[in-house]
Length: 124
Image (cartoon, rainbow, N blue to C red; front, side, top):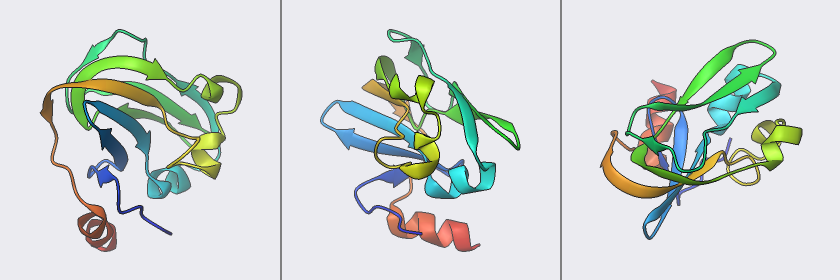
C-alpha cells in the first residue's frame, strides 16, 4: 500500500491535501480496504461550516456505515458529485478520483500525521 507523501493523515484514517487556503478531504487506502466495497457516500452540503474532528460525511459499505471526520475546520466549497453515481471511486482511487469534499480552511485542525508517522501508526 502506497501512502502519498504530499498528504496529511488523521488517526481516524482520513487524509487532507492542503493547497493554499483550500483543503481536499478523503479516506485513506487503509480505511477503504477495511470497509470493503463502498456502495454509497453521503456528501456534505456546499456552504456548510464544519469543525475539525466533526463528522461531515457518511460512507456506506457492504460491511458497515461509517462517519467521516474533518481533518481541519472550514466551509465546504465543493463536493465530489461523481461519488453519487460511482461510490466505488473511493475504493479504486482513494487519493485521487475518490476525494469527498473541498473546504475553505477556517479555524482548527485535529492532530495530523505525515506519511511516515501514518505508516508507523498503521504498524502499531
